[in-house]
Length: 347
Image 1 (cartoon, rainbow, N blue to C red):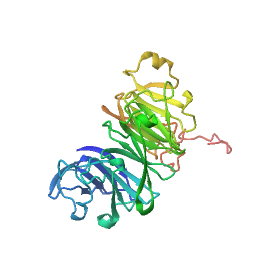
Image 2: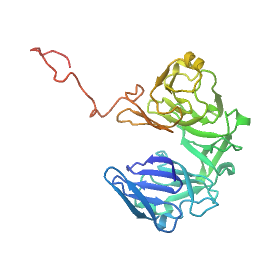
Image 3: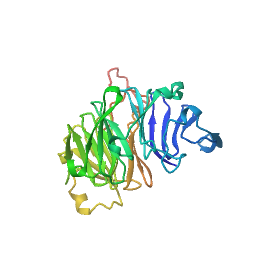
């Protein structure tokens, strides 16, 4: 099964969503629990630096009703996104093509524990606008949920959902034809610290604020038009993984100022030479591929990890990282430090 989503909960457990296999939750000891609709035992191959074996697994009886399978198979459940929401003290799970027509799940808790096995702590929600193939979700600074449709071109590209009375969703939609969204084939979505919701599509980048869709063209957009992933770091910088490399929109700048944009492409880039020579802040680096699928940040080191179709690239000494609170990795020099008989030499 293809891994579609990875999320760390408040207790340090890792939730992994798969295309077909449901969810696996790993604790700090690498022991794991499976959540899917399969009612028989199965085998999983585990391999790491300290472990290489096959183990028998099964979904606990209490958790089998949680996920809804696809219509074609009662044993096939698709999980496309998992979100930890501290505002509602919940973990939200997005499924695709659920036969129940209730693709959005809510676990009333922020970590995997014994409460997870209680069905009373789980809720499901009807599909907004009847769309069954939502792909990704985010929560903005106002507490609204934003859902991006799948890669398939449908009638709705993005839905805005707000929890109302009795936990019912009040929704609004954004489309290519009615709202000037770049495309209804949305592939990524992320909210930043300023209230903007950034929408990546197969045809370029859009942003939504206050019901208005902003369009980006010319030098005010990522180099690649297919936006595979959007990551907002702690400094409110936007990282766009595209089919032509990675582009960064600095959090301190305007998106309509080309000086706010930074672009990183590989040495064998297919970007036209005229565009490469005309773009400001463009860097040619040793990326394994120009097709970047995902972006994430290690907050302890400041390193940025880029996932591509040919391996992983690490952007070290990231100039956009937050000030460190833990200095265990700090290196001081020169070492040894020679005072030369003076007591007031600064270090």
